[in-house]
Amino acid sequence: MTSFEKQAGRPRVTLQTIADRLQVSRTTVSNAFGKPNQLNPALRQQILDLARELGYPGPNPAARTLRRGRSGSLGVIFPETLVYAVTDPAALLLLRGIAEASEAARMALWLAPVPPDREAGIAAVRDAVVDGFVVYSLAEDDARLQILAERAMPTVIVDEPPLPGAAFVGIDDRAGARAAAEHLLALGHRRFGVVTFPLADDDYTGPADLARQAAATIPISRARLAGYADALAAAGLPWDEVPVQETRLNEVASGEAAASALLDRSPRPTAIMAFSDLLAIGALRAAATRGLRVPADLSVIGFDDIPAAAMATPPLTTVRQPLLEKGRIAGRLLLDGWPANQPPTLRLPTDLVVRASTGPAPP
Image 1 (cartoon, rainbow, N blue to C red):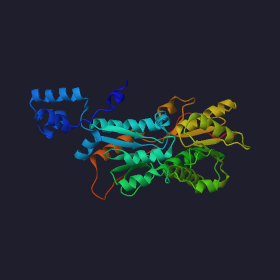
Image 2 (cartoon, rainbow, N blue to C red; image 1 turned 90 degrees about the vertical axis):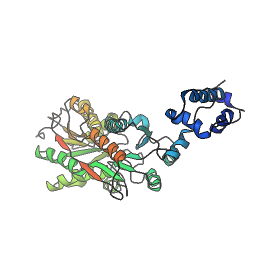
Image 3 (cartoon, one colour; image 1 turned 60 degrees about the horizontal axis):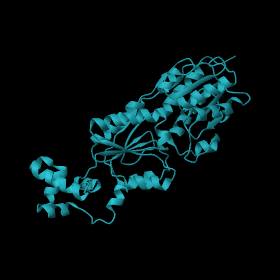
Image 4 (cartoon, rainbow, N blue to C red; image 1 turned 180 degrees about the vertical axis):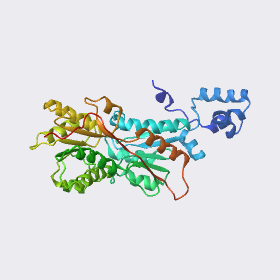
């Protein structure tokens, strides 16, 4: 018989039940659980012994939270499932930064990934007992954003999308992508392919034409495409001739599949620009499968500078962004707060890290 079954049929035990049995006040019983230093040790032990005998576990945590006006927890909202979130290196670095800030303040983290049932995910955010939210990289049409706006709780957006009244921590994705493309242009490349993560929250995988690019609802994706296009336009190259291959997940296998589609084109690109290091590592695998030498036959550049980038074969040229620091700053902002109606917007720097995966365009 489970503990729940043992409780079935018993009269409900409350603080008042214990108070009546011991002929003390309800506040005295409550203090035995929440403020033990305010009670005589012998009386507190008597209260706890009776509570144990009656099967009373203590005051309801949610009710206690409402009375205090705070929960001691921070909510973190992810754009993907929990399995994906804890296996994606960039998301893990960000989460680690948030955790460092929360642990320093003795706060817990409540994680809200996208469950298989989207409605359940919306309800979870609506009902979450937290003191505020860190929101990581949602699409502009994600229904959870409306719930956040209605709850009007302290919120820090990381990467996307900006939300009225919320603080923002991110990078200049457009400038970072432009730097990547300019590096390849300086090496003489003129035929490019692009591997992106999702442009919209619709599970699409495949070629992304200009119409789909223009309709993108994920701000980071729009910004990085625009950065690449800026650099090519400055070099006199038409963007509409650059093939863009979209993936549903930010993972190596998806990057390999997307890069394979680009490399099977004729003429094939001499350089692939990937939205992330994982996608770029997939492109390296696609090149190896086809017997292409990197960088002699094909240059590949990523974005993020996750630890695996430096250990790739060959080591990956990439745009470094401060993922760990973004998490730390987002957590501290949420904990420290900001002046009323003055949510801060912080954009952190990116750096181009040149390694062995990029080289002069082949003749």
